[in-house]
Image (cartoon, rainbow, N blue to C red):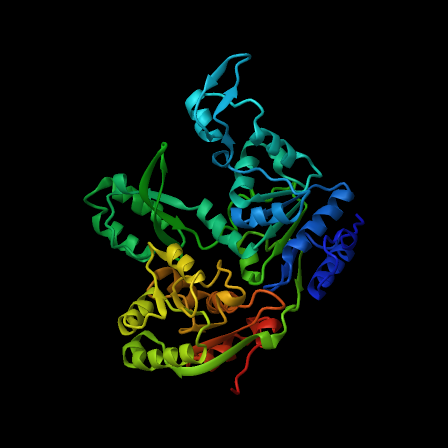
Length: 488
């Protein structure tokens, strides 16, 4: 097959990384089954994706672009006018009156198509959902869907599958697949306690009561078939239409699961992400395919995204109490140095709680908990001269321009070894454990410089930096290493 991706580029100018990716992809299109595009923040991955899709469509190949969330889906549809998508039925609103069943007109209040079907048992006339679904199913349409919409429609109609699948933010695909293949344990049936923190804890509880409770005995046998590095998650899901509490057991890998995201009909897969490794590819079940990697440079000058290891003190759990005052003093110093500028502080929840106790009287700092995380982030984005102490915000937030001019990573984000899953990985696959740490650090470093004309500085407090870097340097991309300033 011959394709021309470059001529379909949608913008007047092309960045170096975009040129490298599209040139490589079109010249080697017959040599790979999986193309992994490792492109950092600001690379313009959406431009790459739509160029490839248009070139493939011109050559008679169908192509889907899928994204992890509706926000990114809507960015595609607003930026590129020819893109088609299908939303969830709850996102389409039926007007206050609609005509259906021939000439019969029934008044009703405005509602979503999902509510309409539940109430009236039929589709509204001039149904935009069905029109959009038909457009997405056309072989050479410029279709963009979120992950879950793609999977849902693929289950009901194989026509959704196309020759090529382009996955944006592909580092999230493995977690999505783990979630889909999770085993659910329902609270109302198993009566498990709420204090279980890991898969190991769940096993200990099941072993304790297996002999006295037959249901738990059956559950124990099922648990023994799960991987010891499985992760448990307290959540809610639908049990015969009713939202019920449950534990999800997420597998370490989905390599042995049916590849319904990319069955044989899907001839090529393109994975785009700044942070995706060979191990991730294997765990997604793509390790036996012909894989080609394309690593692109950052379009953002390195001095505009500097990373400065300060080696303040040890942030190992056993040393945190003793070193807390030192951390607080350094944070206040940085806040003063960046007076009037917004800043971001990355710290796990346990450490953030300790910092909050020390900084409660300093109005510059904003803290959050698991329930008010989004509202506190919104508050921070509208503030001036504030510092958000964020937990679990290594990725998924966009603090461009004045939203944040500096950030501090207090602790190297090693996966927590109190979790049995992480212990198993550390003991049995030390390279992957190192990569999980590197992945979060890479993601965190990209939160505050988001474009070529943006700038910020990232400080790392943990004094195990040099030891960690020596072990993990081979796993780190050039765009990250070139931004380091270690002689400040």
